[in-house]
Structures are given as C-alpha cells and as structure tokens.
Image (tube, rainbow, N blue to C red; front, side, top):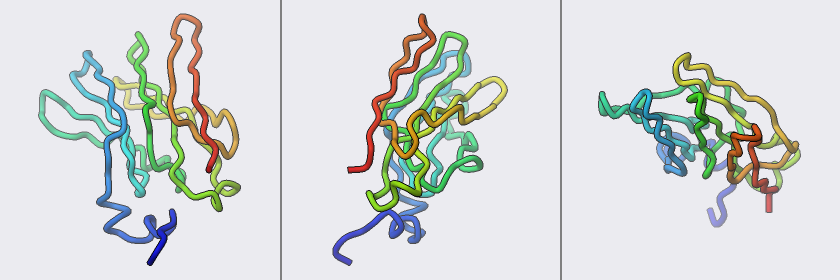
Length: 147
C-alpha cells in the first residue's frame, strides 16, 4: 500500500488499538492526577495518570466517541472549580469532511466522573488547540478544517 487513509488505520487492529501518542496534559492537584489528551484511532483519547497509585485510569471517553474522534491536541485546560475542558482535533482525510461532524468541546468533572460533549462550535471543522479566559468565561478555539 503506497498511501494510507483514515479508514485503513481504523480497520487494522494493530494500528487502531496500539498506535497511541500523548498530545497534551494538565495536572489536577486535588486528585493528584495528570489528565492526558491522546491520539488513538480507537477513539480512546482521554486518560489520567494517578500519581498515588502509579497507574493509568480510563476515563470512559470511548463510550461517547464519534468514529472521527481521534485526538485531543493541545487542548486540555483546568478551571478553578476543578473541571477540565478539552476539544477534538482533526485526524481524518479530506474525503471524510462532510461525514465527520466536527470537533466537540468536552467537559470532564473529576469528582463525579461526568464527561459531557457540550457543543460542536463549527460543523465539519476541528479544533487544534484551546485557550481559557476564565475571568470572562470564554474558551477560545483554534479551528482547523481538513487540508
């Protein structure tokens, strides 16, 4: 195969389930965890590393994932109330842009374990990075359409 496409990675268990990279992290002092945004073709893109138990914790993102949710890229922020916000970045090819819904803003509440997709700000467009202005309750998104 000369050129791999998004579906090629999704269909091959070795690539889908075993190719993982760390793309962003945020420390949460209240629970001594480092929250991790990952890249994974299996859509398993949100974990935490529990520093007290020295183990990774699955935060259950795959249960709510869309098939195009493949990475949190430079997009984890923690608010003063302890909630963590993230955004879905692009990994699919241009030919999937009309089928892929776009990057969602995601909220995680560590004490309850609640994980919620809040919105897709721009349909069919993905979010490469976010920045928080907590004083004005604004989350800025750097959006990135397929090439």
